Length: 253
Image 1 (cartoon, helix red, strand yellow):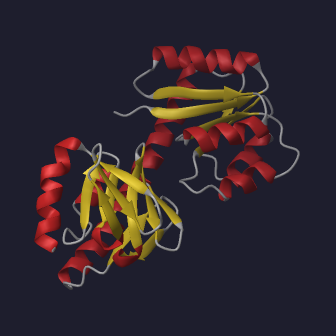
Image 2: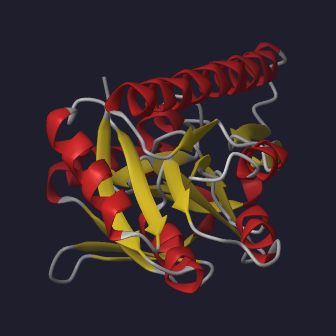
């Protein structure tokens, strides 16, 4: 089981200490990847770390934090609220919280909350992957191969393959860089797209990059292999992939 990557936003040191102790004893299901005591720093952490879960033990004066979450370019993390005030549960579930932990917290309640997060995450991924696979299979069946269905946990976008300049790995995510400069982030990893993208035009030049042959404008062989793309980006070809890349280019000449 992959542990849930969590960020803690709390003004209470005791909350962090309890959650840290929980993590130490339950490393298989939760990993704390950051913590802070204010919303502003919390948003910086969320954007940098892309957590699965945010544990919130803080008073909210307005809805700005939740509005900022909606604007994220990647899947919105799951929320678990923590408070000594039962009335906060109403606010928690209004913002689609997975669970509400009433202080004083006990480990059994925390475990139940984490498993709810895991279950929600698995259900959403299964649903999205089923939909995206159906779309991609339908596309292949029509023998057009002119678009790819790209899914985050919130939406599915149909992107014309000709408009994809390259794709890059971003941890467990994939970022599509399009010819108009737009970036689209997917909740699937780069390896999965290696088997989906049209292999007549797309080649994985590096562990972190898949490029579109239609957007290569120059290949440099000085001090290694590098591809310059139509948007000006220069990407390296991994040494172990150079022979296959040469064969790929020759097949398309």
